[in-house]
Length: 111
Image 1 (tube, rainbow, N blue to C red):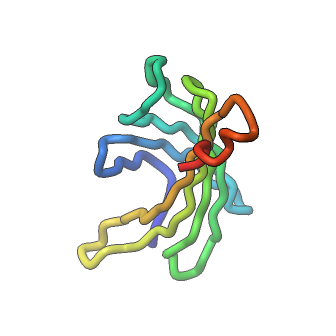
Image 2: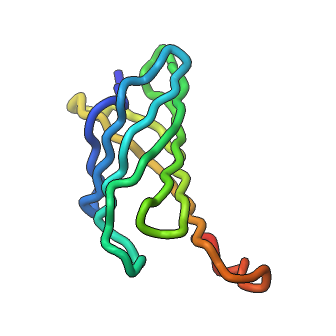
Image 3: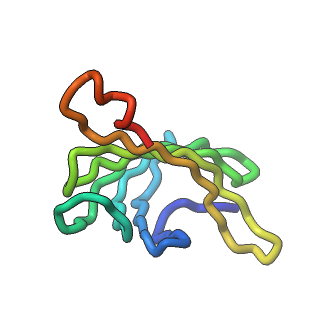
């Protein structure tokens, strides 16, 4: 059964810490990204999210990261899986919204 609490690391070396999950599936934590195009030094950034508390343990979840070192916000969605050897794996997709100066620049604001 997957448990989102604790430390997670992705293939690029970014890490996140998920605090305790409440009875409604809500959680908070901190994201430590290893990659950034921002000009400022990278800082750990707060995250807040929720998950389904499924009986089979392979829950879906989502969370938002409010980057402290840039004018951008990221949202992640995914699912937790238990692999053949019992290891927990998070599969996620993300969108990053960067601040732009004008409405005509909106087209390039989301990755």
